[in-house]
Image (cartoon, rainbow, N blue to C red; front, side, top):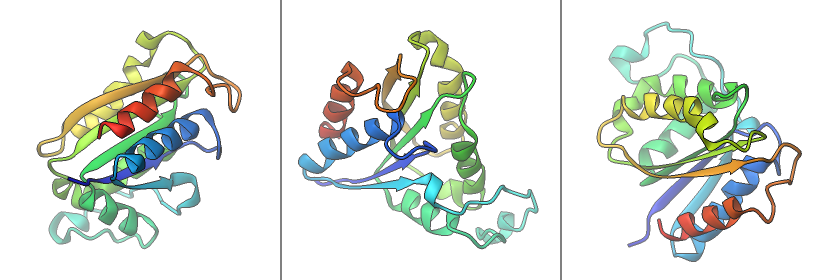
Length: 178
């Protein structure tokens, strides 16, 4: 059965290492017959959550920006891929801002499969644990999330250095196996 795959690429660089891994995942998912869409977070206007509390009773955010559409797509997806470059051994601000803005409807993001993609200059996979804990902190607030896989694009600093790596093949294969 075909699945709806949403890829959230939080790289500030188009064609950056984490973004290239997203493309590989998307290619594999599409070739396997799934509907796959990548949202390049950098291209969206997503403001910071102000903590106003309006959404608590309404499930609607008081901020009018691109997050409403992104959140609709997250709710509709069967599979969500969250991809980031690792900054100082943690999640970058672009994705953290997006996660914070799911507050209005995070209870609607239920029963999803999650894949995490991390790209970092450091070749040590263990050094990525703090970053993964950030992802898991988010998914632990959701109903019925399933962590399906992690792609470690480590040892890549400059744009494009990830090309030809095992992570590129892994991203393609995980996408294909969705």
